[in-house]
Image (tube, rainbow, N blue to C red; front, side, top):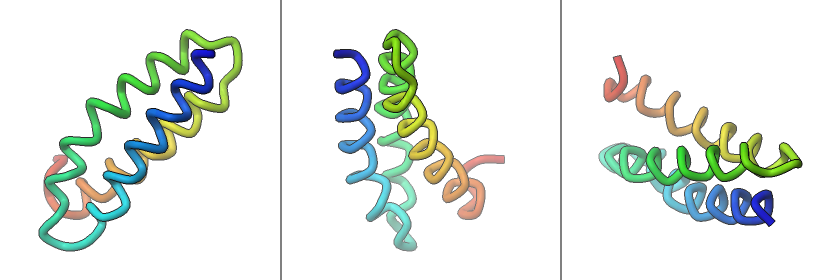
Length: 73
C-alpha cells in the first residue's frame, strides 16, 4: 500500500517537475521537492522499492534542473 502511495506522490511531483524544466518556471521545482521527499519517506516504509526509486529519479531530475539554473549550489 505504501508503495502505491509513494508512486502516486511521485506522479503528482512529476506533473509539477515537467513544466518546471521551462526557463523561468524553475521555482516550481522548489515546490515539488518537499512533496518528493515525502514520497521517498513513504516509499522507504514499503516492502517494495519501486515507488521510492521512482521518487528518487524525479528528485534527481528536479535537483539537476535546480543546479543548472543556479538554485542549488
